[in-house]
Length: 96
Image 1 (cartoon, helix red, strand yellow):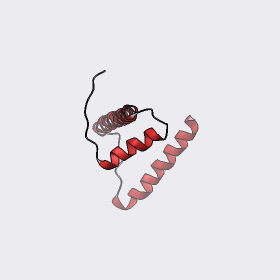
Image 2 (cartoon, rainbow, N blue to C red):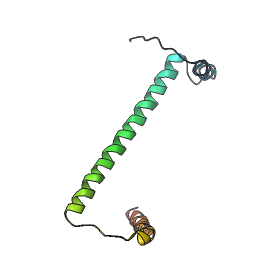
Image 3 (tube, rainbow, N blue to C red):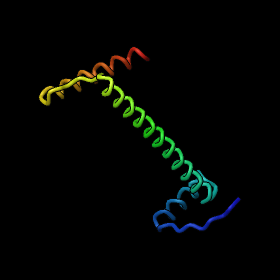
């Protein structure tokens, strides 16, 4: 297994030591590997969110191009968004 030297702040060093001394981890390498697993998981979630947002944007632009949109006056926007939220909530309930 490749080795790597890392420089930790005093706070990070103490955190690693505390976690190892707690018995939850056997050594500092386990602590750092767990941290890397958490970062990898966060990156996967962020990538999935970005992919979903890009797809939603593509769908939104396609809907606009096809004329599937509603013009809403500024003073009616809050009510319109509330209606959308209620509809989404009802759709989520029926889908469950």
